[in-house]
Image 1 (cartoon, rainbow, N blue to C red):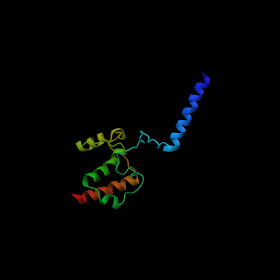
Image 2: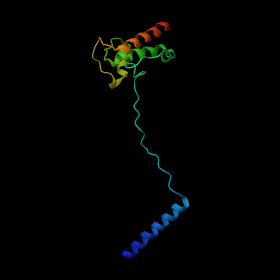
Image 3: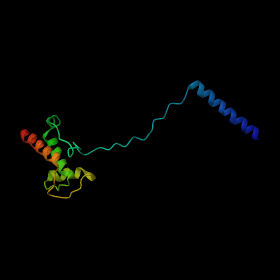
Image 4: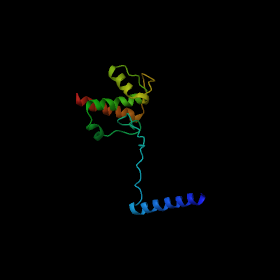
Length: 124
C-alpha cells in the first residue's frame, strides 16, 4: 500500500509540474486587504509649526478659510460657543478635545490666524 500511495503522490507532482510548465507560474494574488489610510480632519495639519503661504490661502473659499482658522483653535482645545463652531468641533470626532475658552497660541499659529483673518475680511 505504501508503494501505491508513493506512486500516486509522484504522479500528482509530475502532473502539476507539467501543468506549471505549460501554463507558467500562477499570477500573484492581489491582497484583499487595503492599507489603512489615515485621513486627517485638518486642512493644514502643520499650521502650528510653519507659516502658511499666500498661495495656499489665495485659492480657498470663505468656508475653507473659516475652517483653516478654526482648526488652529480646535487643536488648542478651544471650546466653541457658536452653533457653527460646535458643529465643526463635533465633525472632528476624536481629533478634538475641548479644554479652554482662552487658548494660547505659538508664533506660527498667531501669524497664521492673523493672515487667514485678513483673507476672510477681503472676501466680505
